[in-house]
Picture 1: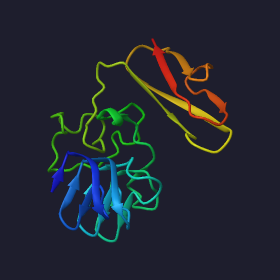
Picture 2 (picture 1 turned 120 degrees about the vertical axis):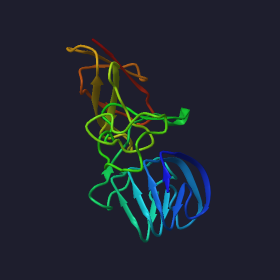
Picture 3 (picture 1 turned 60 degrees about the vertical axis):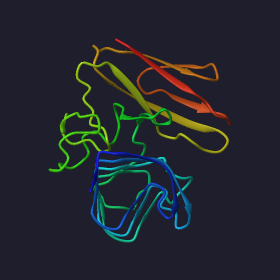
Length: 212
């Protein structure tokens, strides 16, 4: 049994992050891994056992992040659809994975989306589970009590040529009404909690500042 751990790195053929044939993987975050050869399974290569409350995201390039031929995978945060209906699909909204910060941000699909596990009573930092309405998926259990935190999601983050994008903000703490200031690296400025913008070809940085 592996519980409340983080996994990053490069693995051998089939299974860049986690290889499980039996036992269980619970409340882990598997990110930034690469399988050296096919079959991919950049994040997870599973032939048996149980995977629960795990985030498997940001592994490898393209499809093939998860390769399963047996076992069960439930209540996980994944990037690919087609698995058990208890799993949530999409961006887990990790704080700064490139910088080693795998905590969840407000609005994450993984918040309160896990299942209670008797063997997992706290997260990797020692925070008791659950801290909210339910168990969080991944290695961290988030408690935003007393904090003023914002984040946002993008409905259409990548594409070819021109792209129409809608931003959705999430705020916890502070005192409403909030002020929203969006700054885009092309020099444009947006406002409101859910602005939309047309982008031309290129890469852009977007910063959200929320005031109360």
